[in-house]
Each structure stands twice: as structure tokens, then as C-alpha cells.
Length: 230
Image (cartoon, rainbow, N blue to C red; front, side, top):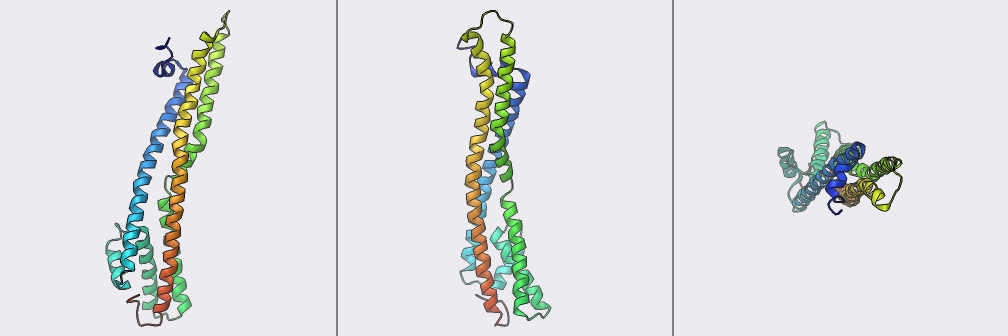
């Protein structure tokens, strides 16, 4: 009896629809965990690169030197460094066109940084919607498999003269496995989504704060001949 009610036997004895649902949920769970681990390492790298650049930015290095370094290492740069580079690029382009209106210079640099900020946030948020979908849909997919399995079990019992718990239990247990797998897929996805959403909000706030601080520095440098220091 213990062997018949083992997890492996319940999966193997389930109807093909329930087995298909189980397979789908297992694949979704694997995809979810893959996305979770990738996001953990991606956010760790983003935070590390942002911290390194912010430390260098406030170390007294000139803006021109920082911009030259950011332009040279654009592919390896972090979000904050790319936002800085986009603002400096637009600022210098406008200065080269001999535009001296402070509002035009600041608006141009601010728009460039805001556009870069949105691209960076979108890049950091990649796969987040997948985790949200897994967390919200997986329990219902598992419930569908359970309902289908219970229907299948009761249809199979319809022709029996005597129905006991021993005859009902295996079919019900097989059906309930899909709910368990659905929850197994959904719970980590929901927990990870909430955690990542919080971490990404912190990254976004940090980037927005940097944009404001860098904008103030550029505004102060308008009184000088170039953006050579801060």
C-alpha cells in the first residue's frame, strides 16, 4: 500500500491531462528558479558597479576624466555610470554648439539622463514580470489539474458497486499532487518578486538621487569655463 501511494506512483498513475499539467508546472518552476538566480547575481553586480562609480565620482576626479573613462568602458559600466555619461555627452554637445542658455543646457542634460535612467530601470526589471506571472498563475494551473484529476477519479468509481476510502484515496491523492506542485512553483516566485521589486526600487531611488546631485553640479559649473571639476 505504501508503495502504491508513493509520489512517483501517484504521478505515473495520474491521467495524461494531470501529467501534462504537472510537467508544465515543473518546467515553469525550473524557469522561475533560473530567473531568480540570474536576477540575484544581476542585482548584486548592478549594486557593486554603482557603488564603485559613486565612490570614484565623489573622490574628486574631474568630470571630464570620469566621462572619458565611462565612454571607454561603456559595455562594462554600471547603470549610474551610463546615466552620468549620457548627461555629460549631451551637456558637452550643447556647449560645443555654443549654447550658453543655462536652462537649455540643464534641460538637455536632464532629458538625456532621464531617458538613460528609464532604459536602465527597464533592463534591471527584466524577467520580473515572468516571476509575477508564475506566482499568480501557477496555483490556478495546479488547481485545474486537481479538479480534472478528481473528476477523472470519480468517473472511474462510477461503475463500482462498493466505494470505500481505499478506492477513493488514490485518485484524490494523485489529483492533489498538482496543487502541491503549483504551490511549489508559485511560493518562491512570489517571495522573490517582492524582494526583487524592493531591491529595484532602492536602485531606482539611488539613481534618481544621483541625477539630482549631478544636475546641481552641472548647474554650478555653468559659471565656469568647462565642466572640469566638482
